[in-house]
Image (tube, rainbow, N blue to C red):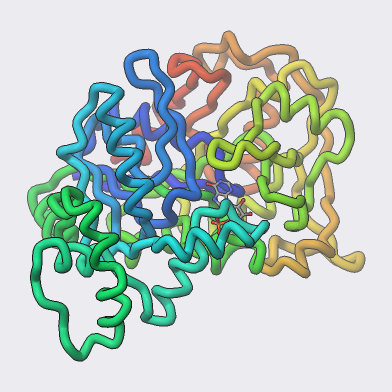
Length: 409
Ligand code: IMP
């Protein structure tokens, strides 16, 4: 039995899908579980040569059973659209399970979040807000309505449920996918099956560990799995995904980004790396590799790392790693607080750049300077890097088998 989580170690968009894809082929998962967020995420999958962008449904949908966990917030109309896209791509949706406890993003939530420039406009914050104030509706409420089961007459939400009755009937066919995910997961675990937990966004955006209030509304790392998948998480091994630089996407650039590159080089990296939001299409802000950010993510529980998009830095004379922050002349770590982060200044180590990594097939093929960059990150954050991605193709992924095998033991 293997239980692995793939989580974002920066501000989302790290390239988690590529590692998920590799592990799915190597290990073969009986189930892929998403435990946080909703349609604010966006991952591109290629099916029979066609590009497809999925938002709430995990990218594992083409290979195994998928569970949308209790920690997610889902929009019925969005799910309908994704089901359609998956079917159009010639794949089956039979294996998609929506946990009874998954919260619903109601139309008003989408409407109000469209007014919030600090969001993706997908109703995420209002839906989690309703969950916390116990005024949210869940998939089980939807299920009861369409199956004609009575609602608890003492339920303080009964008027709200009544209000949505007709709306829910438009999606009646989806009720077949609403199941008790606790029983399904317990059964998989008892039978020693392999399970993958697919994180969305990144820990820099985590509501507790991220740059509050410039965060999303869920727990994006290992911290989100116990309640977001509703399981005992102690056997789960965690891979943190990061890029060789940092990106951050928001509407107005108001969130703090300590290592932001403000000159032409930032624009160049954005173009080479095609750094535009999959959900919002917004240009992403670009920054140098940020070790304090990564160390903060590691604090949530990360065992090994994957370094993506190293090739995007190919051809630069010099590259920088931010090894620490400074606030008012004193050394500082990443503090999960927007105000502290805005006052944090980066302390950089400058290293020689390298010509090209994209042809490298093994770790030893990499230029010495690129290896020094990787090994310096490992040294500073005290974690091993098992994957190095040097291009968009599946084959352009260097796997350091000795590190990966030790992790999988
Ligand atoms: P929300 O999750 O839509 O409420 O957005 C809160 C913040 O998180 C905004 O700055 C978004 O741009 C950012 N965000 C949310 N989801 C993602 C993601 O999947 N990738 C990158 N940024 C995201």
